[in-house]
Length: 49
Image 1 (spheres, rainbow, N blue to C red):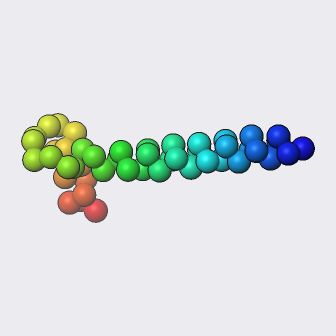
Image 2: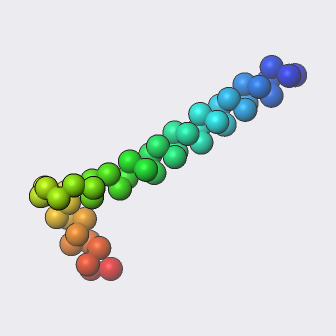
């Protein structure tokens, strides 16, 4: 029983850290001043909204 609780906690912690890393990685394309097609599309879509 205790082992199941520990494993569940470790899995939940891994999912939390994974999602946190994924969310932080989403904005990394806008960190530099270089030009690329992806960044141009991001700018166009943000202006449309």
